[in-house]
Amino acid sequence: MTSSARPFLNRRLAEFGTTIFAEMSALAARTGSINLGQGFPDTDGPEEIREAAVRALRDGRGNQYPPGPGVPELRTAVAAHQQRHYGLTYDPDTEVLVTAGATEAIAASLLALVEPGDEVVALEPYYDSYAACIAMAGGRRVPVTLRPHGGAFRLDLDELRAAVTDRTRLLLINTPHNPTGTVLTREELTAVAELAVERDLLVVTDEVYEHLVFDDAAHVPLATLPGMRERTVTISSSGKTFSFTGWKVGWVTAAPALVAAVRSAKQFLTYVSAGPFQYAVAEALNLPDSYFTALREDLRAKRDLLAAGLTEAGFEVFRPAGTYFVTTDIRPLGESDGFAFCRSLPERAGVVAIPNAVFYDHREEGAPFVRFAFCKQPETLREAGKRLAGLRKD
Image 1 (cartoon, rainbow, N blue to C red):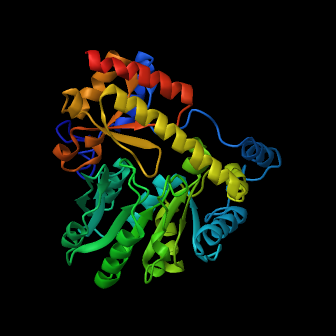
Image 2: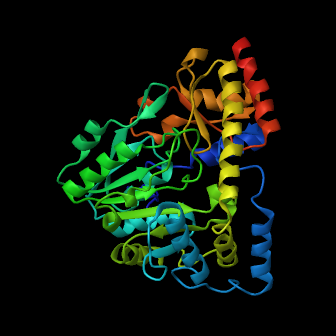
């Protein structure tokens, strides 16, 4: 019998409890608040893509186990997408792997490529699954912190270089960046690429927000830069681009040896998933350029709407160049503890947000920052702004 004195959760995961997203979404449901915390749209994606999923179900495509690497139609569509948008050529049979969303792709990549004791350099603040996946792989995470500068969060390239040691195995890069909305520039990514080549590092790059960039920002896949295609595992998914987050269809593109390694881990996680949805996502990736343009314009307008409401309510707002999140500083409201602020916000204003500190190893760095999602209907964002305006009167 297991001793009651021995903890059930292994020490690698002991620091991880229930995710902040589950906590805050439950708080939103309990209080009837507007949920601007968890990043999911409040409308479904294109009708024709939903119908494609229904058609696949009715035609019996994907109702049983799909092929381990993913259905050929989707792997071909992913390869065509990379060529069409970025000029990257991938073999659908050996260089594309379909996963259960980007989260599984990240987990499988780190489990496959990181040995116990290896250091993984990641940009802080980072999506919470990064830390957990590095821990499950037995790696040691080394954060490089993005800090506010000129109205945005920026990467200090000198700090990045200093973080790399002889024990560093891999760089984990996220651009467009969640939660800050930063989009790394070509110059910044060139420096990252040069560092990876110089130190012979692997790079896993999370690009799930690749089509959600605004204004003058441009998404540059790291794999397009000199020396990077053979050492970069590129991850993306359908959830953010097509507003089907519940389908959990993601993918990996990389050189054959890297894809084979990631697949070796992935096959013992879910093995396969989302069979009928894979056929629908294959059709989604072939939508015309007008779809992607309209998506960006719609979200840019929603960003501006929420940013205006947050500014009016008294927050300092960091206007994002990508993603569908706005990071704010609560200190102008006389607050400094993001956790306490977010836990009290539903009662005070009927709105739910996420404290950015949960995305930091050094939580004091993120303490005054709070993230709001703007992938909601305009009327929802307007109502949230009205409710938050009451904070000035508290």
